[in-house]
Structure formats: structure tokens, C-alpha cells
Image 1: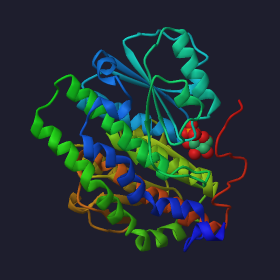
Image 2 (image 1 turned 180 degrees about the vertical axis):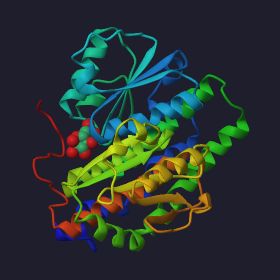
Image 3 (image 1 turned 120 degrees about the vertical axis):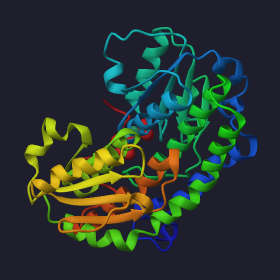
Image 4 (image 1 turned 90 degrees about the vertical axis):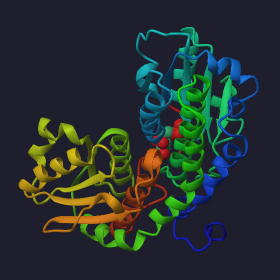
Length: 368
Ligand code: G6P
């Protein structure tokens, strides 16, 4: 293993740092061909142009990738999109619309609940399925009509990192391709989306360069029992993913909330012992997020804010700020995934937990 690890201490650390390359490899085919249905398989143009909505099914981190995709599919492709945890969907009496595309997301392609949810969707009349997967020829892509393989390379750390961000770019590519097929935007906008993808590996590298600033935060987190993560809109699933990473590898109890829900419960938990991580990009929701932060501060909560360079945040008593790169627009959730991964990783190091093999967890869950 030491050979494979190179200069890194853990696979998770290596995989976090491999993200610029994993992303570049995954988008290479998109940059070459543009947003063409052929990216998802032969003859997919006809199939995808019929689609009236999207049903996403996944587990774990892949479910959070799907939760980001919902925002993109509705805002870019203007198609209705539902995201559901595979183990929930497979056991309920769902109403299927055969005109919906069923999208499963799975790093391994072997997660039992996701596989069974796909089969259940098919039994309900869903003929059109797309698998977003990182492992060639695994069970779920084999059972699907269309497939997009992420090119993250082997992911060994149990906590998913590079698989997540490459799933995000695959889903963004799907949203833009569906939007293009439906004539939802002009060629300028399309060129803009392609440029966003082209810039992404560089922006992710900038986010990785924040590591020295994140380490001292990890030292403050390591003695804590609980943490709260807040985000809004397309960054709400990034808050969920940040809380999941922290739980998985540090065993600190972490919860994520849509920041607008603060007053509906979690504010009762806030005191000086509850660190509150805020994902605060410079988007249309920034002012709302700032007022949520004031609510936390007023209760003595300590804020740890990931803000874009241009968000205009200053440090003050109880408010710590790390500035991520300039706001990158629609792909901002991909960039904001990086600092929460690094925070979890360094907190785990400080606590001395088994980063790559957290207790009780498995890389791929092939049993119920
Ligand atoms: C396990 C892994 C997670 C992963 C989830 C779904 O819980 O530890 O990292 O997100 O399974 O796995 P999949 O392979 O379907 O994406």
C-alpha cells in the first residue's frame, strides 16, 4: 500500500488531492465532444429528447450528489426532478411516469439498495434508465440502458471524495445536455457552461490550496462532541455531505440543516460548545445566509464560514472565515465540497481515528 500511497498518509488524503485530475479526466470527453447525448451511450439522443422529468435514486454520498443535481436539472434543463434514497423508494408504492428518466448514482455500481430500486422502477414501467458509475461493467450499469462512467479512478477510502465530485460533473453534464435537447438556452449560454467545466479543475486546485488554513480549524473541532452544518439552495446538499464526512471518519455527531430551517429547531442546540460550519458562497442567497449567521452569533455559537473571496466577510469575535476562490458560478457546489472534506480529514487526524476504514462502515454495501 505504501507504494500506491506515494507521499500521502491515507488513501482519503490522496483521493482528495487527486480531484483536479479526476475531474479533468471525467470532463475530457465533454470538452472534446460538447454536450452531446452520445456521452451517455449510443442512440441516446432519441431516448433523451423524449424525457419529461428525472427520478434520481442513490444511497449515501451518491444521494447527496443527486440532491445537488435536482437544482441543476430544474434550473438548467427546466425539467421536474425528484431525488430519493434508494432504500426508501424500493419499499414504497411509488407512482411511475414512464416518460421520466431514472438515474441511479453509484460509485461502486454494486450497492444492493440502489440496484433493487432500479429493478423496482423498471417493474413499474420505467424503461429508460441511466447509470452514473465509477466502476466499468459493474452490476448497476449493466442493468441500465444508458451509462456515464466517471473517471475518478479506484477509490479506496471508505468515505467518498473524488467519486462525489466527479458524479457532480457527470450530473451537471446531464442537466446541460437535457436542456440543450429541449432548446432551453442559446449557444452563448452553452459555451459558458463548457467554459465553467474547463475552469473547474483549476478552481478545485485553488480550494485544495486552503489546506494549511483548514488544519487549525480541525484542532478546534477535534475536542467537540457535536457540530452543525448550514447551507442554502444548491449548497444545502454540500452542508449535508460535510456533516456526513465528519460523522463517518471522526465520529463527531454532525447534523446539517437548510439554513432557513434554523429557527425551526436547531437554534435550540446552539451555544458556545456547538461549532457551526456555514457554506456561504457569493450567490443570490448570501444575504439570507448572513442573517442566519447573525442568529447563531446572537446565541453565542462559534461560526466557521467557508466564503468566496468576493463574499465580503471579515473575521470577528467568534466568526472564523476561510475564503474559497472567487465565486465560480453554477459549479460552485463542486468547489465547496473540497474544504468540508479537508476539515473532516484533518479533524480525524487530530482525533487519531482510522481515516480510511472507519469503524462499522464498508466501502460498498452489498447487503441489506
Ligand atoms: C457506502 C460508502 C459511501 C457511499 C455509499 C453508496 O456507504 O461508504 O461512501 O457513498 O455506500 O455507495 P455507492 O457505491 O452506491 O455510491
